Amino acid sequence: MLPAVAKLCCGISYPHLRSMAGLQRTAVAVIGQEIAHLKQWGRIQHLMGIHAEPKQENSKSANEEQLFYIQHGQEAMRKALSMLEDREGWKVEIKESNGDVICSKVIPGSRTVFRLEAVLEASVDELYDLLFVRVEEMPRWNPSIKHIKVLKQVGPETVVTHEVSAEMAGNLIGQRDFLTVRHSCKQKFGVYLGGAAIQLESFPPQAGFVRAEDGPTCIVIRPLDKDATKSSFTWLLNVDIKGWLPKSIVNQALPQAQLDFTRHLRRHLSLR
Image (cartoon, rainbow, N blue to C red):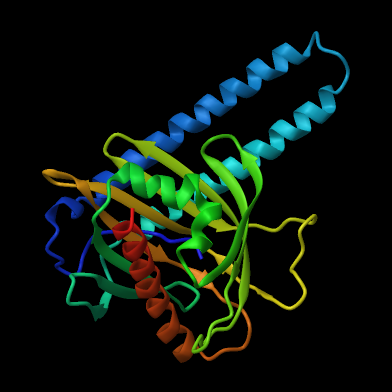
């Protein structure tokens, strides 16, 4: 499940995260710049291919495929940030003694999304490295994930991954697998990680698993004011787990999964 992050509403006492509208505008502007650069890059590649040996059609097709994945990830990030910007309708589900807070909201379609807000003792760069650059290593420190494999590396900011959750005692939902486009946007003021489910003919649902669908979801990681060794971490968990489980069970299990993930992440950070 793609971890996602968002810090706003519910009167939480981290004032540097209350300007989510500005955060969204910045992210959308960055995404717009990325699209412009991609279009320019595509034109350059096309001009270079005019005098190249045959394979022009294959090259064009590959470029279009890459652009599709990148735009899919960018659009997921935009939609998830819009959910975070909307402060109406959130209610507090869990408040932990360490300051972690989980809020929930029902979105159109009657699905409930969950927003976890926390402060982690790690820099933005450390968390970006753990959650995106070295995403395949996540099962080493998070026992709730059996494996994550990068199926496609679409440039430095976008990947397509296959993820399988671990079969664990007490897991109310059971094992699921996920096929997800993950997109990152790294800026000096923080990091955005967005994602959403995708369908690939070359990688159909696997036997023995229910294929769940992520997103649109996102993570926002920002340096804590006056302390670059700590980061604010907000995770918007938006997932359709599929299957026939009652909503009451799903809505109980998902915020617990967020708490478990954050606990495992903190434990891993404490050992570095």
